[in-house]
Amino acid sequence: MNSKHSSCYPISSYVQIKSPAWSKDATIYQVNTRQFSPSGDFGGVTKDLARIKAIGSDIIWLMPVHEIGEKNRKGSLGSPYAVKDYYSVNPEFGSADDLKSLIKHAHSLGLKVILDWVPNHTAWDNPLVESHPHWYARDYKGDFRPSPWWDWDDIIELDYSQSELRAYMIDALCYWVKEFDLDGFRCDVAGYVPNDFWHQARQALSQIKDVFMLAEWEDRDMHAQGFDMTYAWSWNEVMFGIAQGELELDKLRKYYSWNERAWPREAYRMTFVSNHDENAWEGTPVEKFGDMLCAAIVLSVLGEGMPLIHNGQEAGESKRLAFFERDPINWQDHFMHDFYKMLLALRKQHTALHNGEHGARMHQVPNSNMQQIFSFVREDEYSKWFCVLNFSRHSVKTQFKEHYYADTYDGYLSSSKHQYISEDHSFSNSAVLELEAYGYRVFVKHK
Image (cartoon, rainbow, N blue to C red):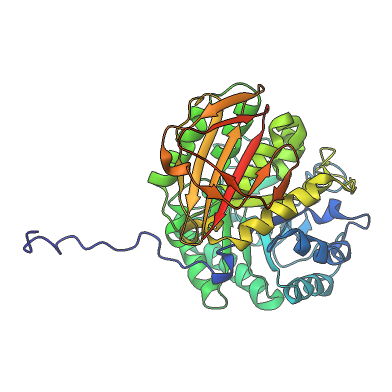
């Protein structure tokens, strides 16, 4: 090496934030307080936290808890994303003390709680409209405007070129961490707010607590100085396209190529088959993924990314929840509860399956049926995982073209039983594996 040039361009870390240590093996659970329980309040959530913990979730994401605007309200109860007052608690859900009790109980169980924050826009009757009208964006006529090109006519947009607005919003974020002991925020349409604001907000919040930040956005730059996790929207869209027969399996490989080469290792990507938007406007998991659902969930949990459970998924998520009215979840015993519990337990127990830089990379194992079969290995010094998923509606016999997979494994998961089976299984270099339609096999070797 020419020492004359060896230090001309020093390399610094692209990611300037450090995720909380507790997030390295965490999974996330979304709560819609309005629909979660028959009572539709904080108390109904608090009573069920132990069950959520027992499934294997670590982070509770509460949808917005603020008072909802009345002007131009949608439906009888309105959207929780039309915030009337950033310092308020929606009386529909209970009092501030009820929310504090929820968070305190969650912490006693070892759960973390993040709050849905809506920074891009407010309700039409938010007091800021009268006190600080210059903080709002305007349309070509000079009027307040909803977000352009969307049907969000129950809200109006803020203008982050206003430094005083930034200071107000950061103060409000800090208030909730100080007063309620929150562990972070899920930030709605985070990409509609300038990225440098999130750097400012993260710096201020970090002076109070080691927070966790989730952006409803898909952009690697948001990880540099603001967010621990972003949405893997592309993963969800590709999986849905495959399930509907509209996309080739190679699109999924391109997603993982993009994930590996274009995103920093520290970045957590949230993988999901459902959330409040998907459920309300696109369909339930069964509507969207059909017979491919279990295989999609296996990949969301055991592949790279942090899996999300939308409340009700573990009960079969039998309906689209109304967004602007009361429509409680139909809780019922369902195999999906134990399925998620089993998968999340495996994920937490094995470091190879952890989040971001704490977990192992996925390495593709080429096979003889690349249009139907998705196969890969995740391996670290403690365990090795060989995952084979059939994303087609036909049974397939396949062989593997590299020897990385060949090994003797201690146990496996099978789509025929949706269970972990502790039983030895050996693969030779010429192994043939048959998978039923939308079937999967996952083999694990403990070291």
